[in-house]
Structure formats: structure tokens, C-alpha cells
View 1: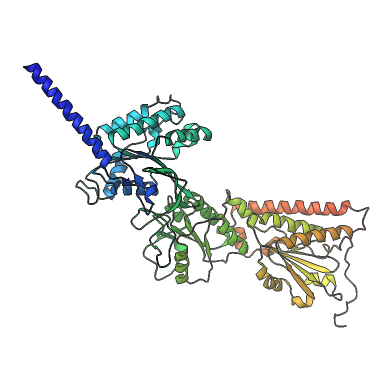
View 2: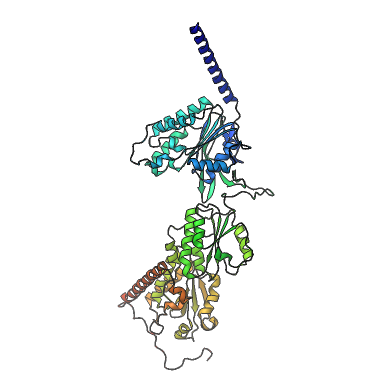
Length: 617
């Protein structure tokens, strides 16, 4: 009797298990497909089929990864959703509380939502330890999930899933991928693997070829593979391939934005009258961090601005920022290097979506220093006389922009290129050509604009008088003369400002010095220098160095106090430029003397003992 009852109960339980299996399979086939959590993504690139395995390469614990996880979980077409976060338990619990989970059921979320923590225990393991056996990591991960039960038509989102696989062994990785895909299909479970950079990093000890082969082996087991990556500061959704029923989409790329709710959305081309103002490059794009020196004594400051004490506090507060607006102040030349370091650090650390503005709040930045700031990462340089209300409008105009200039790896290189050397005043033709060519070569790093002014002297005007009237005051401005022309090189000067600069250099009206004035820039300077050198080799021009001694560089300094307080790096850069100038001058003199037997010696100018005739006589 007992044997018959046991057989009867065993048969009943077997039938019940088979019925549950059939119901699960039917439910899995009839379940409505879900969607990946990216708004406005085309359906054929967003569908999540029941029982399918998907892989998305995205940086773990990043804003875009966080937005993707919770938007996908909230939009799931099932009650059973499990989210595995690659974080400590306290961090996972804090994030759940931020989303509104405080012990009771939260509105708008799946009823059976599980939030699990997967701390990075491998970080504390010995780096020289033997790698785990194939399938060991995957079995361990699935065994940990089994404690919370497996349900048909469930959705699993696993952050940091790269820990589950054997990336060093492509063959083992292929087996793991096929096993997990079959497991998902058998149980009717949809799983999204969020793979971090470690899936292809050098930290795993594999080269790029092996990493590419490993990724291909895993991709072959998935129903869809996509990547969230940054290009020049902009987030992109790049689809390797994605299956939707019998359709297969490959190679699609879409720009991503964050909306006001913090969700990811496709940045579709705007139509007339359909502009979206809530689309952001990063979640913190509305944040504005300002140095106290920028605000000054303004009576009203926008309440959402973060006004901090100084430049160092601003840099520290922007650690981890992505698209915020940072406003720094320039006071004087003594702080130039520190300002360069801050701008360069912010740009390299925070990416190209960060907006950086430099505001003049003391001395006016020279043009070469303005170009220096733009080359080191600044989006905008605001003049000293710009009203505060206009500053707000300019900062607003930066929203949605990306920094696309090439970024130098070392800001000191750019700083040295922007500094004018110690040369100032008259130089003979050979030294002038060498000095000017050196300045052009150094300024090419920043694309500094220079101007070479060629003045045709009247026949009745003595060269000595014309040279005596030319008195440049800025370091780097030099001049020379040949038989019939006077040449003035203006360092870091724009072509539009050459007239005003020339008028300040001469102590008499320019019309009295030259009957014809030609302004040269860019390639025109190089061609003119080559012609001047060739003419000087054929017939050396007179050397007036004994009449016009080199002017001390300190005259060209705008402020002697600033020169005394220059940082050590700036002084070191100036010393290097002075040494380079000395070498160039020495080489130019040696080249001029090497031609001694072939050419007559350079003519020396001697002051006349009787007055010269006036041009009108």
C-alpha cells in the first residue's frame, strides 16, 4: 500500500513539474519583448527578446551606465527583474534609496525587483595567482543568482559581467558564451551583460589581437551587441549587431543625450519648430562652478552657481565632472602658469564635454596668451570690459558645445611657445632672419600670428635716422634694414592690429619714415626672409649694431613687479629661450663671416659730422 502511494505521489509530482515546465515555455514564447532603456532608439535596435542574451560595452559606475540600467529595469515588461550592481553593498543600498526604495513598494517599478551587489573581490586577490578554471566564474555567478530564484520571462541586468568570463582563453570564452546563451533560452530568461573596459584592457595581460578574438567569441553567442563610447566628449550608441526577430541590424551609430529626468535619449536631427531644450551632453551640464575672483563685488549672482574661494577649490570641486561649466579668472602674468595648469588639468581629467571659460579680472591677456588658453582646453576667453550680464549670456551660449581642438600632452610646451624671448630692438640682417625664423618655429605649436612689416625708405632719408625712430617696447619685436628697406617683426601680433602697433613703435608718423608699407603674415614672412637672406649673402647689408646697442629685455616687461614674482617654470622657459637666441645669433654671425673671401666685408655705418639735408631741400 505504501509502495503504491509512493509511486502515485512520485508520478503526480513528475506530472506537476512537467506541467510547470510546459507553462514556462509557453509563457516564454508568448511574452512580449522588452526594450533597452534608451529613449527614441529605433525598435529594431532596442528590442529585448525573451530568452536572449545581450552584451553592452559601457564603463561601469558611470552616469551613462547608471541611466541605462535603471531605465531598462523600469521599462521591463515583466514583474521579475534582477539588477546586479558591481559595487559595494552600501553603495548599492544608497542608490536604491535615491530611486525611492525605502522598504515599501515604489511606484512605477516592477513588483519583483531585486537589487544585488557584486563587490570587486578580485581586486584584493594576488595578481600572481593562477587564473580560475574555465566556466568556474560563470558557474559562481549563476549560483549566486540562484538563491533568489529563477523565473521564466525574467530580466537580469548584470553590471561588471566581464568578471564572469575567461578573457585569456578564447576557446573557453566561446564555451562560456554558448552555455550562458543556452541557459537563458532554456529558462526563458533575458539577460543583459554590461561589460566594462576590463573586457579589453591591458590589465588582463592580453594583447589587442587576442582581446579582439575573445570579444568575437562572446559576441557569437549573443543576440545583440552594442557599445556606449565617447567620441570628442559626445556619447555614442554604436551597434555591432542587433537581432530583432528575423531582421539583423549592423553598424548603426547614434548620438546620445541626457534628458532632464536623467535618462539616455537619442539626439535625433531637429526639425523646424521641434527643438529639444532638455537634451544634455552630460547629466551635470546645467552645473556652473565659478571662482570668487570672477564674481567680485557683483550684487546679484545666479543662485544655482557654485561660487568657490579660489582656482584650486574650483579644480577640486570639478573632480568627476563631465559637462559642467567652469569659470576661472586671470589677474596678472604672475599667475599665468598656474592658470595654464588648471585649465589643462580640467580638460584632460573631465573630457571634451566640459565647458571652460577664462575671464579677465586684472591685466588684459595678450593675444598669444589668449591662444594659449584656447589651445590648453578653454572654450572661451572673456574680455575685462564685458559686463557681468553679458558674461551670463556667453556662458549660456556654450551649452551643447564640445571642445574639438587638438590637446597638447604637456602644457609647459605650449607655455614656452607663447613666451617671447629676450630679443628686442635692432639686429643685423643675418641675426634678424635667424631670430624671426626661430620665433616662427616655436609659435607653430599654437599657430601664433606674427606680422613682418616691410617699409620702403625714401631716398633722402638716412638709415641711421630711420632706425633711431624705431623703438619697440615688447619683448620679441625686432627690426633691421637693408639697402632700401626697414623690416620690423611684430611677435604675436594680428594683422588687423599691425597699424596700431607700428604707430606705437615709431616716435614719428610712419608716413615720414616710409613711402610704402607692406604687411606680411603666414607664408609671406617665410618667403620674404628667404629673399632677404639670399640678398644679404650676395651683398652684405650694413651692420648698425655698434650704433644701436641691444635694448635690455626688462624694458619690454609690462610690469617689473610681475617679472620679479614670475614662477620658477616661467623663468626657466625664458632662460631656455635666451640660450636659443644666443645660439641662433652666434650661428648667424658665423655664417656671415664664413663667406669672407668671396664677398666684401659688411659695411659699418659711421655717423656724419655734418647735418644731412632735409627731405624737402
